[in-house]
Amino acid sequence: MKAKIFHKINRPFITAGEQVSIDDYEEVGSYSNEWPVRDNTNYSPFLNKAFEASNTITKHWSKNKGITGGIGARSTSVGDLMQVDSGGFFEVRSIGFRKIEVV
Image (cartoon, rainbow, N blue to C red; front, top):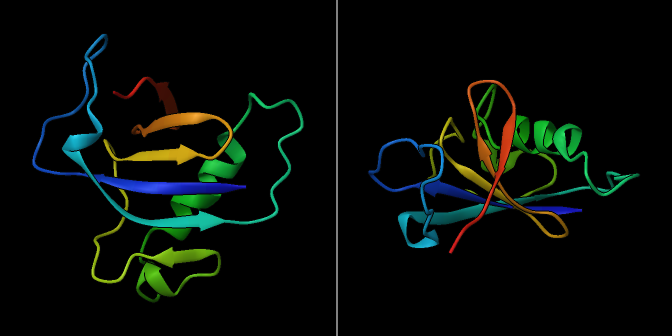
C-alpha cells in the first residue's frame, strides 16, 4: 500500500463542510509498505505508520524506512493530507485521521 504525503501551504485548518483544493497543498513525499487492509475501510493503522515515518524523531524523516522523497520538508502535522492509493484522501487530525473529499 502507498500513501502520498501533502503538506498544506499557508492556509488555516479545514472546517466541516469546506471544499478542499489540492492546490492548497504541496506533495512532499510518499510512504509505502506491505500493510494489508482487510476490509478496505480501516486505513488508520496504515496511516498511523505513514504519519510516524513522515516525522523527524532521531533522523530526518526522508531517511526513514518506506519513505520516498521528503528531502528538505518539515515533519507531517495536523492539517496535512495523505492520499492512500486505494482509499482516497485523509486529513491529519489532532487525534487520528478524517476522510475528506478533495477537488
